[in-house]
Structure formats: structure tokens, C-alpha cells
Length: 179
Ligand SMILES: CC(C)(COP(=O)(O)OP(=O)(O)OC[C@H]1O[C@@H](n2cnc3c(N)ncnc32)[C@H](O)[C@@H]1OP(=O)(O)O)[C@@H](O)C(=O)NCCC(=O)NCCS
Figure 1 (spheres, rainbow, N blue to C red):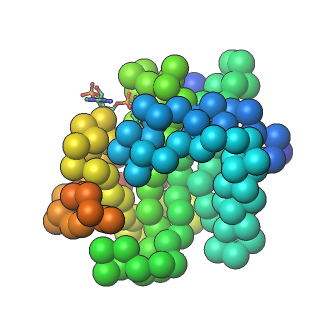
Figure 2: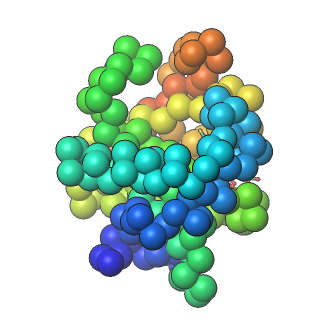
């Protein structure tokens, strides 16, 4: 499997059907889903459908979320990277969204930040992105902290299925200036 990005602690690559155990541990945890609509998965079949859905985006859009594994142990940490969003969200369509979701045992170690910086560098400077958007539930302190640390500008607050979310944008020039 091709490694797309290597950081100090992580290898970042495409998601595979063999990631089902790690993905199930991630998405069946209600705490992980606290700010994601509170609908954790209940079965590995559901997780396999999610994996298929993401892998289909690699074919359709040329990009989708990537997996982070621990460089030392090869353990599945979670996913990060970009989704090319083709359905209208906060009146935007056909844009790159940055996201991250980690298994709970990996929280609080700076991993989401480390991975996001590497993905943004890859997106802007290898894939030629000009701007990247992101959003987070206003109450999701961790995610909002990361986006601010990464240099994203908070543009506005909008309603996502009845839940207030912050909407962020980061331009290539601003990212490269702050690097
Ligand atoms: C949100 C999440 C990605 C954070 O990952 P992480 O690897 O623990 O984040 P980091 O360690 O890189 O933390 C980045 C900053 O946010 C802070 N932070 C992280 N989680 C926090 C929390 N729950 N509350 C307050 N601050 C938090 C950290 O202290 C750090 O700030 P600092 O550098 O000033 O100390 C992780 O908790 C997660 O996967 N949550 C479930 C899924 C999710 O909500 N995804 C985001 C959807 S928008």
C-alpha cells in the first residue's frame, strides 16, 4: 500500500477494507460521535459500507479521507485528510473539506494537529489546492482549537441539521506564510 504522507509519528495512506476492525472501534464509540450527530455504528457490516462509500470517492473524486497509522506499531489511529464535497453545505459545493476522527485512546497527544498540518502541506503544495474549508460543531472545543491553531479563519456560524456549526476557510498563501 502506497504511503502518501509520512510525519514524525504517522503514516498516512488510503483506507482499505482490512481497516474494518479499527474503523469499527472508532465509529462504534458514542464519545467519538458526540459532536457528529450522535449515531455511532452498531455492526461491522455498517462499517464495511462506510469503507466502501469512502473508497468509491477515491474513484469518483480522486480523493477521500485517508487513514493514519502509528509508524512504530502500524496500529490504526483514525482518519484525516480531505473530502471533495459535492453536495451543498452552507451554500458551498465542490470544495475540499479537511477533517479528522481519532480512536479515543489516541486523543490528547497532538496527533490530529500533526496529521492536519501534513495533509494541508500535501494538499496545497503537491495537489495544488487553493483553498480548503472545514467545519465543526460550535461546542466541539477540541476541533475548533485545532482549526484555529492551523490558521483557519472562522468565517461564520451556520445551522447544520439543527446544530450550530462554525465554518472555516484556509487559503494556500496564508498556510504557506505561517508554515
Ligand atoms: C477532536 C479530535 C480530532 C482532537 O484530536 P487530538 O489529536 O486529541 O487533538 P490535538 O491533540 O492535536 O489537540 C489540538 C489542540 O486542541 C486541544 N484539544 C484537543 N481536544 C480537546 C478537548 N476535547 N477540549 C479542549 N481542548 C482540546 C488540545 O489541547 C490542543 O491544544 P494545545 O496545542 O493548545 O494544547 C479528537 O478528539 C477526535 O477524534 N474527536 C472525535 C471526532 C471529532 O469530533 N472530530 C472532529 C469533527 S469536526
